[in-house]
Length: 324
Image (cartoon, rainbow, N blue to C red; front, side, top):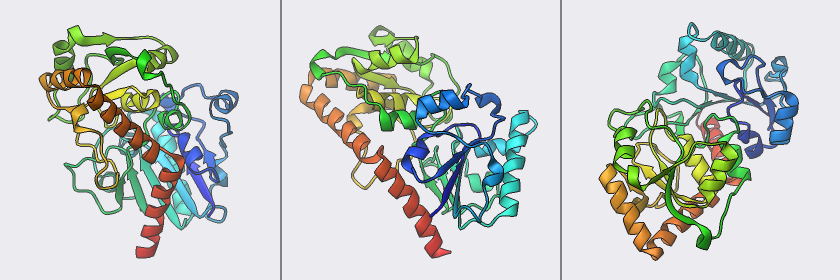
């Protein structure tokens, strides 16, 4: 099958690693996501070139078109000029072509059903980053919490980089690399400043360059992952790249794991008090800590792989094609 990936804002170059036979396109007007990714910088970072000639994207050349976008932004073209450029370009491609499969990777901070946000886009499959257990989605919408925007694609980092420090050298500290305030994506979530204030005497807060931060993270036994506007957030990907133990705030995010696979309950909390109790239990019980870290590594090495992600994407495409 011939596959094109159109990623106008350069949000998920890691998908090219997952689907190496695909051709990767961007739109030169990246708007607020313009991260100075010149062709040379992009090539040095990711090891492949992007194509800006989106006129080459047609259904004679490609069977499958995968589009990466925060699709809800299409309804706010007056907010940022570049959104109209992207929307017009995408709708023009779709109006002139009939791809065997159209896949939208909805890299949105919000848990809305994208088929309701943009009913004028008739995608075969929607791969939704923030797929919430509280929402009843159209059957074409599938959970896909493996992408998020960042200067260096977090998916690419998880697939390629593994910062690791031997257990005996890890520092017994809880690292936090975010800000104290932040918009909450779900009103049921406890605000992060309550958690940070409560844990203040137990946190190591760091604000530095990403390379130094990732190195410090890899040397830490614990890293805090607090909810922000959308799930998952970039802390999740950083911790999975570092092999520190992810201590994460409860979220309604759905992971498409096999039955029986999940992050350890001993590392997930709803209140600041519960967070500290669970960390203290992990600190005083080496076997428990190792069990939780081993489970985290199992999840990473099973699901955050090119092979599993490729199979997941293609099986959803094939399933849709056999039922329509």
